[in-house]
Length: 110
Image 1 (cartoon, one colour):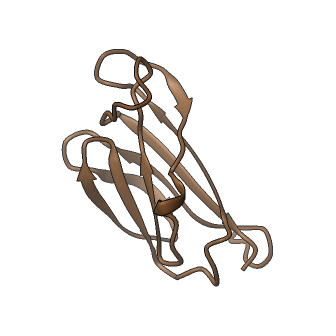
Image 2 (image 1 turned 90 degrees about the horizontal axis):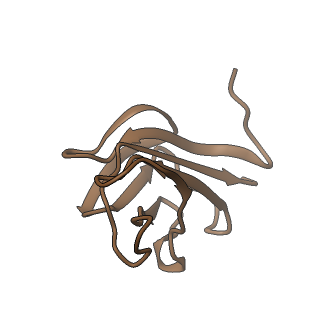
């Protein structure tokens, strides 16, 4: 069952960030762009009406250890057709890492 309209999930993805990024399963995702280590852009199947949406996410399983942590996408990474996120290392939040499992969810009111 799909839910549309106000306060609905616009896009979600469960993906592998190792080697060539690939979605295991998704909704509302047209493609994933690999911008470098721990740096991904998620392109939406349908654009949002504005860029005032909520992005939730976590990454699990870094190259040096397993952990789960939320991440921030940065204000420059939000657009109506895509969102860009970074997956930081647990030991140094300024260092990005490719991780085994990445979850991203975009919730919007349009």
